[in-house]
Length: 320
Ligand SMILES: Nc1ncnc2c1ncn2[C@@H]1O[C@H](COP(=O)(O)O)[C@@H](O)[C@H]1OP(=O)(O)O
Ligand SMILES: [Mg+2]
Ligand SMILES: [Mg+2]
Ligand SMILES: [Mg+2]
Image (cartoon, rainbow, N blue to C red; front, side, top):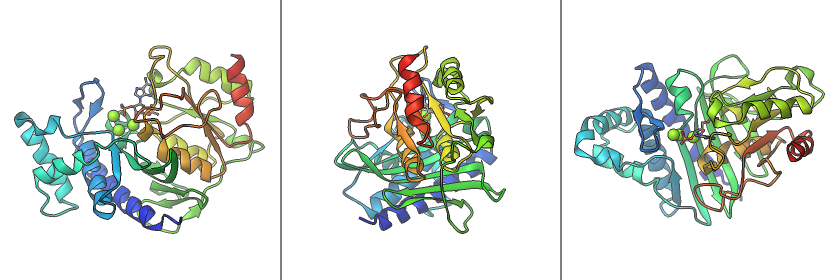
């Protein structure tokens, strides 16, 4: 299958969602707190509304599994917030009403099915709030395997020095990057292990999302001598796919050993790296399974590499 309509719909939605996020960020948004204590902003909700609307319009029978939902926004005391979200959405979709916006957000309440979409409207909300990196991530999954991934990184410097990169991958068709503002797509290729300047690793900015000391020890054991790059969100997958690092390590935090990764935090990034010639598994070398549900219950941690060093990394992890 070529997935050309799916890819075009996801690209257009990611670009619009990224525009909304940047508009919100220029106004210095405040964080609201979700029931799990994690932050969310009007941009997370607006981005999900834009993306779900676009997917639902082109693929009405497809399930969509998004990070956010509108239950909180429908409470009467949240009317002003929903109105604010609606005005940001309305800048891109004129005449959108608060009721429509809430409905589009809730279109993302679907469950994992033989064919489904998953999206993270803002991956790295903490980075977004810090004016650091974040991503808009959209993926199409069939039979537990990611087929299309689109990752917009609005604050990431691209190869030409411009700010804002769009990563696109289709199973069996390779991966490309293109300036988010538009331009010519260029193929993505992971870096060779002989490229000393890029023989480095990337990890989260948030120390509680990983195991920093173990990540450093593993990197050293495979011969990485430089300090880690720290970047929020799935932008880390883009960094590996574009050859700016050989390795991304996300090992379970000792503070939350039972944490399971969400499908929307990895689906788009993973296919971008795989189609750029790299490899993505959990810390035991198992492929990430996008067919088990919202949480990847059968996987622990994530290892992303240029492929060449992958077995060595998994070997080190097995012995440490
Ligand atoms: N304890 C944890 N371990 C790993 N990832 C986490 C943990 N808590 C939250 N996350 C997720 O990490 C992602 C941010 O990525 P990064 O750390 O690479 O910048 C977010 O999607 C966030 O989930 P959530 O979407 O619920 O906020
Ligand atoms: Mg998110
Ligand atoms: Mg996320
Ligand atoms: Mg979140």
